[in-house]
Image 1 (spheres, protein in one colour):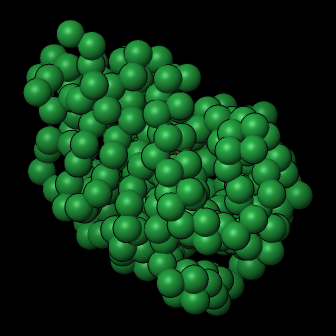
Image 2: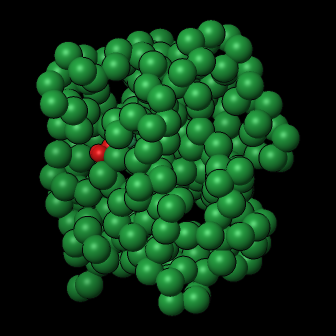
Length: 254
Ligand code: GLP
């Protein structure tokens, strides 16, 4: 796992865009695994800027998103499908039919999870997966549990996750209690992983994820076993790392 320092959020976003952009240049028909949340928004803005400048072409790319709230339709402004259109897809030339996200309106969990597994298998897996990280170490919506969940599944969201995501809704009661999420196996099978984290509230979990025991109680800790993970953080998100394990942080000006 390589941890890359950036002074601030915008620099972090640009550095991550270098890696994602390189993936698209090297393999124009790549499969991008995409994430929602505030962490990747700057990356998406930078990818849009590079597309508008004629530097990137998404016309042959496919995408699979990590997760979706159960019960929300694509048109719902709180859905992750809406988020992706708003923050990325409607600003670039990826064909809409090449974009995939679990269908929150399919209330038959077994059916929807099997469908999504087939989507990913038919695409031949993920070339580059973008991840954020929850305060409890969740990736996608793989919440802390007694064992790693391999495949796409339906999760009961933890109270802390509901509380953290309340900021996107009018009130806590509006936050869905369930979500569909890609499992740990699809994430770990991605050929390359880019994880983004910003802000001091992520500093402790970044340190534990990168240096602590590998445990399903901190789902992101499993990334220590992956061959090609780059973690892009701003300085506040690295504050604990810089104090306790500065030798693991790359790219910090001396
Ligand atoms: C949500 C998403 C995750 C995301 C996490 C962190 O729970 N399901 O995929 O990584 O939030 O979000 P943020 O980047 O806003 O801190």
